[in-house]
Length: 303
Image (cartoon, helix red, strand yellow):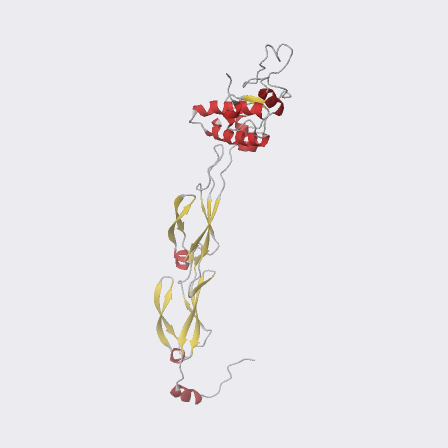
């Protein structure tokens, strides 16, 4: 007794043409020898499902198979039918056949719709273009880092595609900068190189530091007393705290510069620039009012 072609494809005898085609596509992808190199039995299974679809995928052949006019191998069940008269026991295929790497044979079919052109060309016969190496796809990833980790450099671990990857963030990295990790992307095709991982850095804002090119900008609040009398105060930098001298009679908007305390990267080293901002007393001070009232009037505006 011949094989049950419907059982091979896992469909019922009343299955539609679309259902048969869908079932074949799934099985062809599953058992194709080019994706089952370590499973010899897959090649036989692939030939079996291909032969079954050769008959059931063709309405004329399917009708003959259902009427027991041909068997599961596509051969006529009547003695000599289709032979000796130039007939073809597989039906009219207009002369087009494929031969797979598994040795299966059947009418011309566009396997590229299942596997893609590159894999298809690996097992088709003459007339198909040869496979070529193709680089794997890149993987894009956005990483959020804090301000100091970016400007001073750091190392962070991220999980991309189920893999833990250590990412070295160079000192002086700026917001929007992209790091390329070579060869950690998707696997290449036909021996092609792996893709890369592209990590775009999103640098978080700092409570009081901002970047202006290589320079670190900071607004420095000072009291009215410090502004008038001058003072020596401690201020933060990206490298730690330092002492700064506030000159007497300083004004809001005046800038103090700390050389070499800015961003350090391949472009060089910047400075830290502090913009003074005078903060008036939070509460009313009668004595201060009396002193200020005695000050001479000055024209401090140019308009």
